[in-house]
Image (cartoon, helix red, strand yellow):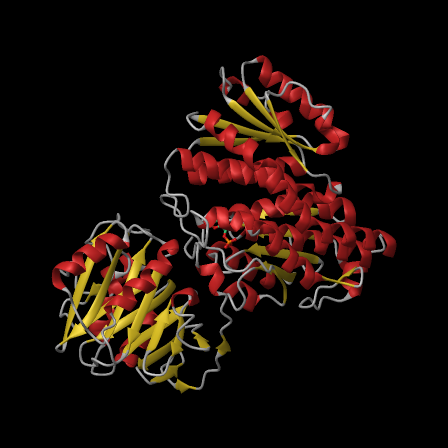
Length: 609
Ligand code: G6P
């Protein structure tokens, strides 16, 4: 949510700031801006809309400088206008600042710490930060940053320029990600490694209010009190392939097609010799065997849907109650979790603010905490005692696909692992699960190929529909939930999901002649029940699209279209059923001319509440 880039070097930094912002656009893309220091003065350039609008603005002035900061915004406080775009500049023009996060007490700061007659040039929460820097500045920017940050409640990563230090870039971060890297003749800050990963081998991650001051050949670190500290760096691993669309038109379709590999890599990291291994989980066998009383899964968005699938696999396998919570609800509830609870947090980015807050709450309550995370070194991974890393690689499209599929594998593995520790499955059953799991990457590849053309055709039939419904039962309901979210987030069609049996309690009145209803029907024991629900909507004129597998296809009735995926164990079916749903959203969005990789109003990582 919001992207920050900063550079100090020995050449003109403007082209690199723009390139950096383009690679960060997935974090927010409703306005952008840069600030540089030229001839000892701060110059600022901003535009609302995409970064191409900022480029047009820069074309007029052609600024050049060896130091600068840039920002791409996802609006929280204040609409996405030029006035609200970052950087913000202090009233005396000495400081320019970019911000990722939320200043929760901005109004209070205005009332209690800043002059009552002060005028503000934006409606943002951020602007108070730059006013505070001016207030506390006495010639030492680090001291001013320490004092300003002490007044701020909320989350922040700031990139800062100070006119009196025309060769030094300053940055500070607390509960919002920020990295610093030092190249040979240039140094950078960024809210995401992707913007700077090719510039150096080592990365420093700022946490807990740490501050850095950066010159082109030197970085100094300070703690939140302003005391200089030594900081260790992490090695950067670059997977350049992930940053390029290659032969594909969009990252989303590329990432859909990368799913066999994402799943294979995740499985390989979690199985060995026919058994599940969880290398970064140190919870004792005794906990799983005797102490565990409940599993809670907490997440947001698509990761929440993986949790729903996980519940339907884990609970019956492990015979432990498993409940799934939306992180933004969980964090403000009074959860009955304790030392006998296994609390599982799922997050692709490892940055989602609500999931992180929920994790901290569960820890405080004494729960055993385990996270399923795609981004190594992310806040959620760092704060978890136990982690299962999904190996999806970097995901760029805002709508998740390959990370979702990798998360499913992590939850299957967790379920099988716990079931084995608890003696609920035998070694032979574990081996059978592992064998079938290892066949999944191939089955995913085959299913994608099998359904692709049918789904493309189907998209042509439904893309003008104002509404679409998804139904299913148990894990099919979980898969339907993900299919429905995918559809609404990238096509903007009003898409709703319902537990199939719940339809007749209201929803059915929304079904009109030709309304598409996607029915996921893959669970043998309740197959006939879902068929009845399909018949009910069909009788009211719906266009019924059944999504099932080869085993059950012959028994489907009352469907206008049938999409068929490969067979697998019932526990793993969601991994195949979700594929046509991802493709259906993708092709529908394409026909509707939507901005598929960067849907309106959304952001890939949500670091604010
Ligand atoms: C955003 C993304 C979703 C994602 C959700 C949770 O809403 O657009 O695709 O599922 O955040 O993100 P996380 O990184 O925690 O999985």
